[in-house]
Image 1 (cartoon, rainbow, N blue to C red):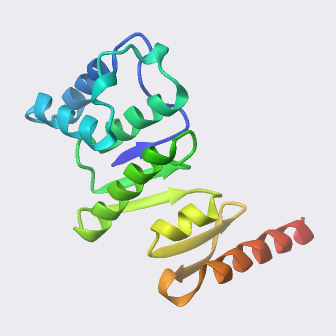
Image 2 (cartoon, one colour):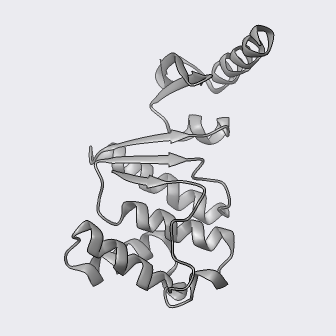
Length: 163
């Protein structure tokens, strides 16, 4: 399982490369250097790999956090609002990672987000959670973006009325 949270889970006193090498060893990744260079390239951060994490912007840390999350080629990738803090290029790279995982049946991505456009654009199934409970599952093929937004709005309105 790979996971991406709001906290980068990177050690601020280490460089990005040192962080990834640490996690690669924990995950038993081999060959370490090749895979680290591969995920750094996927995220487009080759020129920052030797910079200490504490000296990076939030968006730069987020890119390395994504690299950390996919480093060991997980079967399941859990992400909490993965697009927050990323610039446009970072979001494009993230979408590509998610689509490759789905297209090549490499695994499953489960993403929690309030960004409805982002969610609809990358999903094949959409689940609605309310107060920690699953209240609906739809295939993206059965609804438009407008229907999705209306369903979400209806759910929020009902929750507000029930509170």
